[in-house]
Amino acid sequence: MADIIIDQETCIGCGACVDVCSVTHVYALGEDDQAKVLSPSRCWECGQCVAVCPVDSITHSSFPLDECPVIDRSEDDLEKLIGYLRERRSNRVYKDKQVEREKVTDLVRTTRWAPTGKNLQAISWVAVDDPKTIALLSQKTVEVLVQGAEQLRKASTSKIDPQDQKILLMQAKTFEHLGRRNEKGEEPIFFGAPVVLAAVTPHSHFGRDDAVISGYTMQLAAVQMGLATCQIGYFIAGLEFDPDLGRDILEIPDEREIQMVLTLGYPKHIMRRMVTRDPLPFRWVEN
Image (cartoon, rainbow, N blue to C red; front, side, top):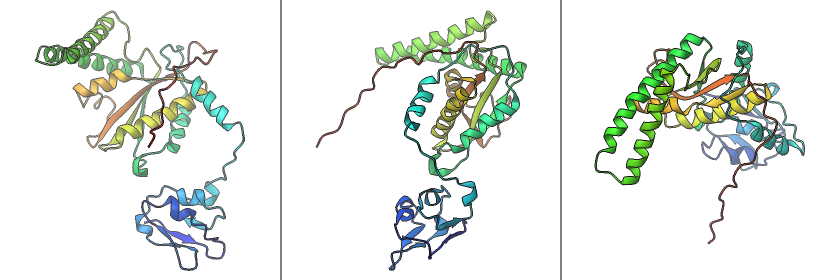
């Protein structure tokens, strides 16, 4: 249980901690309009209360103030963020250059700031930089997808909507094409990337979402470190046919599951321009 103390001499009774903790009701305003610790056992340890208090009246055992710096905001922060978002690209062409393990470790650490459902913070990352291990993981993925293609073709022969039948056949052809590329000696899954990273979580309703958010955080940070990434959807597709895909190779315990896979490396080509994207459909719901 978290140890939480509110300094009654400095608390100004603004109620901010009560508002941001409205889900778990750890705090309440007393009759004197000062904040009180109501139920510390219900704390999710998200840190919202410490982050929002305008006078630093809250002492929280999980969030020492010397580890929680004041946010320094500037007017151009939004433009910088938009630039980072636009600069990120899915990269499938890498230099034949190993990524320093220290750099990978620093990159993974950036994801600790990514949000997680119920603040579980249950994501772990597994990294592979051994070419033989990556090749084996790629081979297993191709095998699973080629076998999956057979299942898709069989399913397409059943009495289903013609459009659904078309989708199944298209997926089957895609997976079969991966098999042919693999037979030619190509690497159609990880593109010869020097590092493969897998996001792993406990079996959880939030696992996939948490992993994707964590992974995207990593992709944005990678750009600023001179690295490039690509989210590997084929591996996730393989998990649909074989939930244990990669489990033995990556030494994933039974109580956890792979939720997302990324490639990582130094880009062979540097992106010079930020290309445009289609406008997003958007509308207000009017009463």
